[in-house]
Image (cartoon, rainbow, N blue to C red; front, side):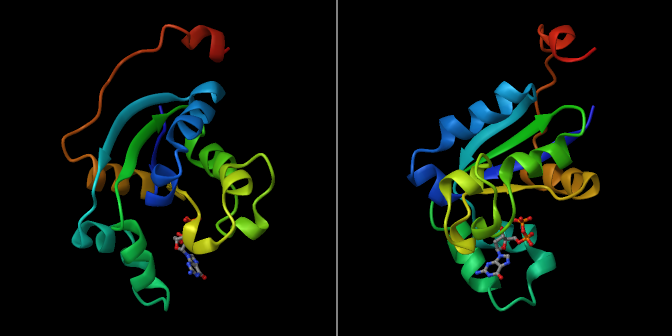
Length: 148
Ligand code: DGI
């Protein structure tokens, strides 16, 4: 099944939003296949955001990601990449709908609480980058109650 990389950024950890964010993905019916809290070194942050390296906000973005621990996760389920992005909300919290994570918890684009892969291909790369040790392959006993 499809997987995505979801990361609670340092502001989400500092503000005590980890439990709420995990609950939203769990309650939707997605399966948690990888989870760890880590401090991020500059090289990893720069690699993760390499596509944005020419942007004027790149240095600030890297400083933000390395400013405190993050919670790195792999979530699995049907269409989890696209649906995960819907749960997260628009990049700029000013445009994020209420009910989304960024819509409910964030104000500034540079403190938008959470990352989610933007495509299946990005998800594959990001999971390999953040979970080189691999993830956990368990089967949820509620599966037939979530999928027809
Ligand atoms: O996939 P997203 O996180 O929604 O968005 P993205 O991949 O385009 O950008 C990655 C992060 O970079 C985003 O979550 C916040 C930051 N960012 C994007 N555009 C801007 C920005 N930060 C600032 N300060 N200004 C921007 O225009």
